[in-house]
Image (cartoon, rainbow, N blue to C red):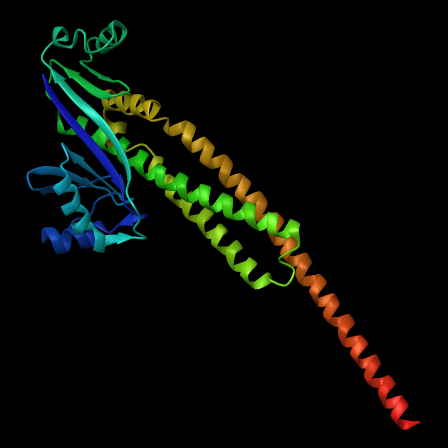
Length: 281
């Protein structure tokens, strides 16, 4: 029985695969957004995705550091890696798995010879194909990218809540410019998150093969992709609602300041006219 580990790392919003292939691999490639660029680093297979993730089969610390070093210059908005890890198990027969997994999971493998569990993708009586590895790798890459999106959305939500609390305290009446700048930052994060959610789409490889499609759906369930997306979608709705409220508050504050300025100007004109009247008497 063979055991492998597979790990995904999301290191930014985007990795420029064209520049990476042109400068590092010395060849030009044109691939769709869900297709990985395949590299080999110190004997380890590395799959690099345009949406900011890379996946390593049987990773080692030195290999991870080397890949991070290679990808640094091609990564847009780099950040500390968000990581997902999983296992791959290849067995010759179900007998080898007795005691390793439960009876229900053994029955679940059935004639397919492949099953995704919480800890590993198990392949029985068949080879671990490149397509199976790519399907597992893609879901891990999606999940690590989703970690980054969740973190960005949480930050934007916290920022919007702080702005609302500051308005409630009345501390922003004369700080409209910084408030508008913060509001723009929140809206930009929301826009980026919406555009990044496309990474959750099904890859072409799953559309073409029913077996891989079933594996892909099992993995999405294990990593709770749909549930996490729904939570992000709700948070984005909350951010939009708060931003609309903040926009209205900012507009109201601007109008109030304008009214105060007009009243001050009127008061100054009246004072000047009164002084002139006194001087002319």
